[in-house]
Image (cartoon, rainbow, N blue to C red; front, side, top):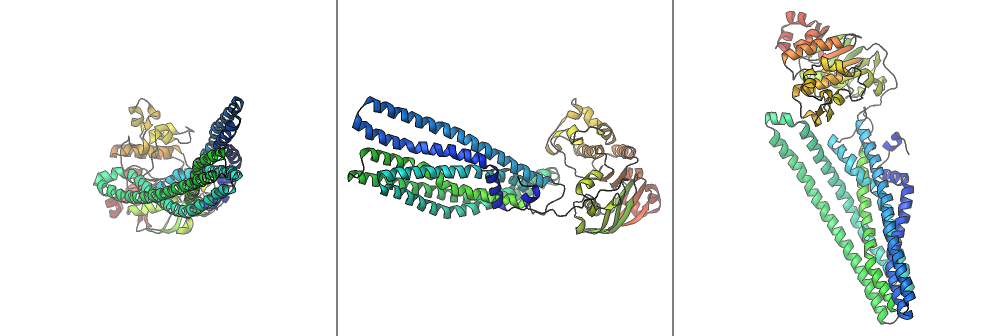
Length: 566
């Protein structure tokens, strides 16, 4: 198995080759069993022809008994080979789909963002539908080979009766596949476009679910629904186009197969009428002509499934081959927990410079909310270090020199809109299950009332995105999770905007107490949190313009007083 770095560099066709190579053992076993199934199926009309031929000549019960026994063996072989062959192939298919789902999910969840123009809903579609359709190649190849076995056996058997019958089957099969191979290319292109449109519709649904509450709040849900309806309509139209193309393909394949079967039957009838083949050979030829439609149908569908699998693999390659937006360094922060921002220019930041020393509790009052959001994005490494001017240092080392894992262990930035996951209060607060500081975090974030409200306590079930919690409860739960992580450097972005003033006062005191001796930076306009900080920095027009305690700034800075007074 290739390493993840190697796998990221592969195009879609190479992904299919990897899937085939990784399952070669299962495919060989499946091919043998499915080939045996098709050979036994083909043997059935051949056996019937031989039975008619010899029973009519011998007219003995012994010959009839042997014939019945032979048919029983053929039927048993057909049943068992199909059963075990499909079991082997479907197990390999399911396992391979799982591997690609995990790989795509791992790429989407890596701490370093990737340079790919896809939304989370689109990546979800790639990790599910496209992974499944790519893995279908595991079944396609054995079924293709086994269908070829059936056609070859039928062609040989008919050639033994009359060479013209065998040649008719071979020439007809080649002609059918040539026509369908051309048609399958359009199916692949149409399917790839359909998958892209369905993925966009899925991404739109995900966006709407995330913003459902605010949409209801300002009455924008109808406009949002109209936007989704347009995207979904595009996906529907493309699906209809794909269905039309598939219908034409299937109809053409069925018609061509029927024409070939009819041609074999009529040719056999004419040869029997001319006396060039026997009645038994005629029965065999007519039976094979009827039977050969099934493997030909399967054989003719394979190019379509190959194109669909390749289209899905190409979409997976968009994620797997996407390069990280930044290349982290190998270093680790020095112990101590200091945070330095030196001349950072990004978005609304115009050269912001400040230092938070180890163990200090600092608050930043940003007069423009966008500036606080830009600063939080830079500190969270959501913006690559090379994408902005200036330097951010954690533990005395530049972020660009640090491995992303060490940054995440050392520095935690908790966004104002932290996600709440389906599970329990406990799993949201302590996802890793260490349980070391969970009680203290619950108390500091004033989440105790939520825990006490339910008899399950911390094991109270939370719905997806915290749908059964109020806005303030979700915000306190997110804060509790940030505090429970006990990071050496903690950055909180507007952690109390959805709670009442009394609760906010208690949270501010609790956070200052719990984080005593640990480096903490709060981006906020909350008077309670500003007052609890050791010092306050004023961020105005993208730069730090003032620095003092909250009360001194209130007494001597009118602009500050207007910005934070409530």
